[in-house]
Length: 316
Image (cartoon, rainbow, N blue to C red; front, side):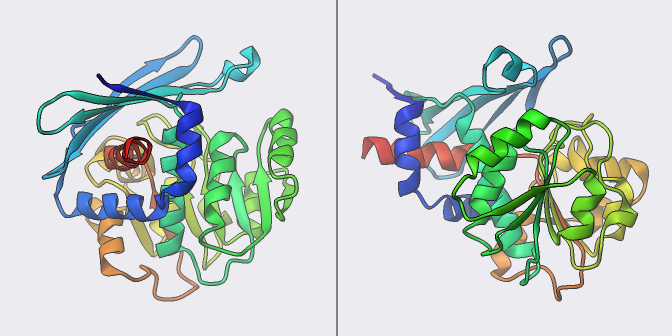
């Protein structure tokens, strides 16, 4: 009989898991060719706007395989519903038996994405971070900042969002957190004031331009996870000294790297895969004047790692 693990239980056990470590390990195994990840399954909806992603795979010689369905419907807050929904299924890799259903409502997707953002900053951000810039103020924008606290002690945060209601919710979420959070009027204000930037929106037009980006800046781009989305002017990737992808295979069809290659501003063979950076055991940048970019489109190995860890923590 499979275990039905609900969101309340999932949230209760997550603090007992070293998420940065398991996500790092997953990326490293992925880049070493030890993970089987088929192409992403995807449904895109127009009215109301939304999307559903199906990601699945397994680590060779492991105990489980995982299938994840996660969706984002952007008008849901108007209905007093969270924009993220979904679940994860954990199967035995030895027998095919369904071991667990994780009814996470898309929460684990948000968490593993935020943990990946922290991993990217760990290996790519400059040693001295003057201010953290967040493009967007939704759920992922909150989680990214939350997980960055394990990477940097910087408490100065600049946020840009179009939605006034998001500003109120963002400030309430971080009340008494110790962060000095201010909102700026334009995305380029983020680039002017911050040397660690995280972009978290579903934008279909670039929000940052190449001329905005100062030397020494690191950008983690997490919003562009389909072929239509884009948050960075492709010229930014040309300007960058180092461009890193969570998945070279997925960057052929989605993300900032896909859009930059299509625009002719970078060559695919100049991109480094994140797992290979992690395997080196050191930062990718040589100095704090380099511009670095991590394009995170979300890889199934992240779902495998976090689903396994939750299941084993609950059922051990």
